Length: 164
Image 1 (cartoon, rainbow, N blue to C red):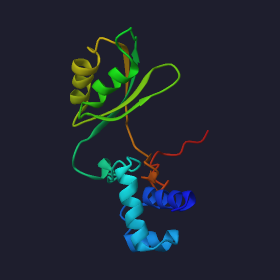
Image 2: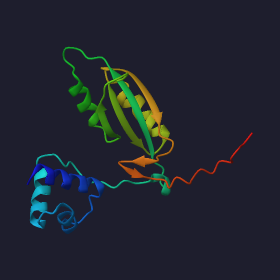
Image 3: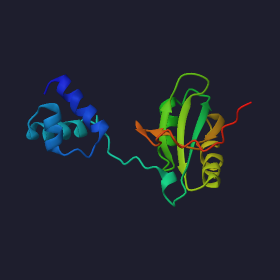
Image 4: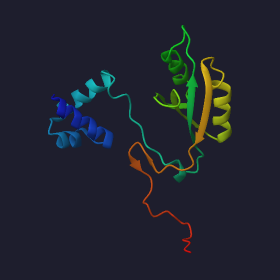
């Protein structure tokens, strides 16, 4: 498989991981057996790490809270970013974890059933990690787009228009 065919397959999977093998073959110009083999290779090589639904929790009756936590750390001779990241990644409440450049070290997205759950998790699990020197938590109030999926139609602004 060529690199461009592999990229086209990845782009199609990113667009919709539920496309059938027949759809992916038609979209990429590959045979279905080649698509199946390529997907198996991508999964085995760790390029494709999983598939998941993008859920608009505001459209459900279930409460779901997402927070972005900026985490600063101070490393020593025995502790590196990898050590801290393995500890943080081990928590089920941590949905996304990235080492970033800028004003803080780790970008951590935490999910919980309530603001109290998320706050308790940060206070009880993240803040006490010896290398952690500071956390700043930002609660997501409304999601407009996630994983490339737009959640709104752009006409939801129900504020009264005010003119001078």
